[in-house]
Amino acid sequence: MAFLAIAALLALLQGIANAQEKEERPTAPFVAPLPDFFQWTISIDDSTRLAKPSPSAKPQTPSVQKVVCTKTKNIKRDVIFYNNGGTFELWYYNGKVIVRTPGGGVEICGAGGFTAAALVPDVSQEGFVWVDWITGANFQTRTKLADGRDAYVYTGKASPSGYSASPTESGAPVVADIEIESRLPLLVKRDTRTLTYSYQSPPTQMLTLPADCLKELSAIQARQDFAAKLRALPR
Figure (tube, rainbow, N blue to C red):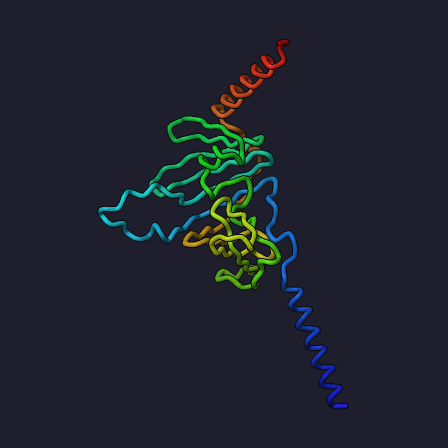
């Protein structure tokens, strides 16, 4: 009888442990989708740039220090800050990437293309960055951060291009902390580079594209309309 009682108790404890473990595991969505009105900041720390360069070393190209992102429905604006004091604006609108350079120029290209990849830093895209590799299979544990927030910890590997490779593909190790309550990313680290997310009060009204961006968009549309009329002419 005593043996049966002990076996039953062990089975009960094992069932409780299994249930607790199941409850601890995250379920989809593993990262929250972006709300229609939202604002957040990505701060970038790259330890490879902390070392003092030797006198003979080539000057390093400016690196991104932070990106302030604002989204209002179908319009998103990034203000990108470099470690040399330079800034520029990046807009996402109607499937296009619009870059406003410090010199006053406007460059427009299709989102997701090679030109956009050359113009846009790897810390800027329409949604949260460096988190599209996260799945239930990447989950490691839950932890309490120094500020008291509870977070899920994910680990995996991601490719340099887009940081969107599956965990089985070759790439550098990547670690992410995702807040449990909100499912918002808090920290993502890949190699020597760390992205820290912070969140601000959401905008209360729609963003408006700057006049120079609207002018360039109108010019592009006019050229496309003219080309369409030419193609429609009888041959």
